[in-house]
Image (cartoon, rainbow, N blue to C red; front, side):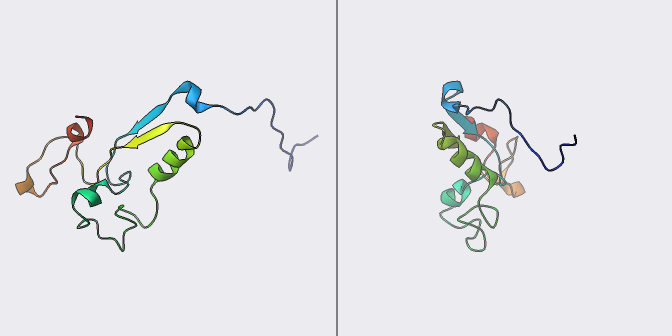
Length: 106
């Protein structure tokens, strides 16, 4: 008998993430920044509006949904992502922001 139009879930149980881990740390750049650069620049960049509360997008970024999901499961999330961050140090005279990954983890 074909199963088209039918679905059945067998053996699914709720997973309590807080038993597996208690904290998630997020690093990243503009696609993950939840307004940290905006705060550092005192609201100068990125302009809000048109950007959404200092994020580099027109709505919440994936890290917002990710954090909300896990916080509801009892897991703390810490987002250190900064828009414009690079993997290596650059000079301000070369028009780079003064942030790199080492600034996030120190």
